[in-house]
Length: 178
Image (cartoon, rainbow, N blue to C red; front, side, top):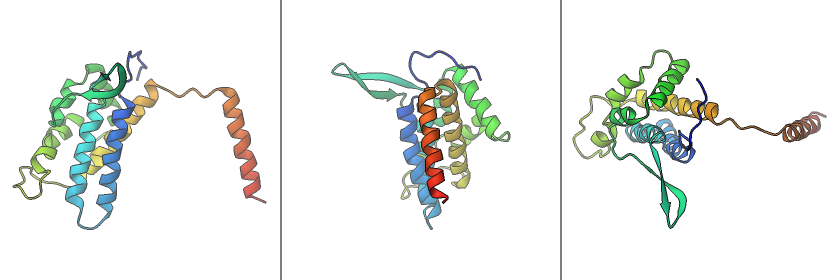
């Protein structure tokens, strides 16, 4: 994947991080008995937010650009199709590297309305099934967005900082192994 010059950071790290919170909640719920349904709803919301991290618009309040706005809507496939073509290609390629069997558009089509159609347990569910496959896909999408971000915006650690960290690590390793 070629690193491109972007005026603003896409995927947006703040929006991506918000998705990871729902992902974490999904993981906790998935491991606790009787909470698969709620875990899947949280995973579907994480998927939505990961996609929206590519659809960010700066939003200034009183001149301060500290807030973000994204596209509205919950239809995962529609959100994906609103993403710039180069970013869609990057997502497809990165997901194929992580798991060659995953077709992102097929998955997004399958899960496109899971959040809106299944979020209220007391209403009739309009989705075919709710299972751990949604959680697995959200994990893969999280990893893909993270990899894209790392490629586009690598952290360049100054050499003197690397040396200091290595020295500190070696010193602590020596003290831990008498």
